[in-house]
Image (cartoon, rainbow, N blue to C red; front, side):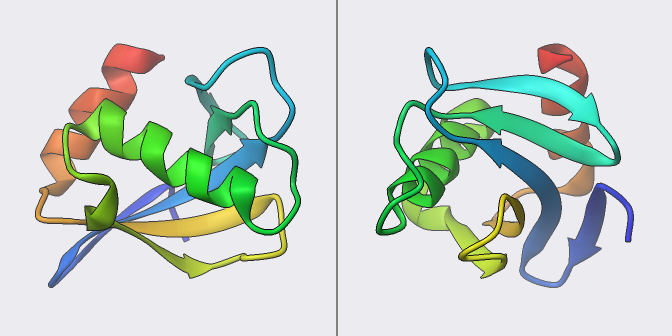
Length: 97
């Protein structure tokens, strides 16, 4: 699967989450995944929730428009961003890289 894939309900994004970072931010693309750094520890889903909010802020959607598709207990995750196009998300990634 590529980094981005268009779906009927939005765009699926392959990400790699780095918990316990100095701040929440996107760190570009590495290994075919968008790298997201978050300050939360990987306990009780806190890092995943923070990664979803960080991604939502970067794309310009509400946090509730970002849904976890797979990888709840893994560093590698797939998120669905609802209500955006592939071009919008690609432009955001290019800007952040």
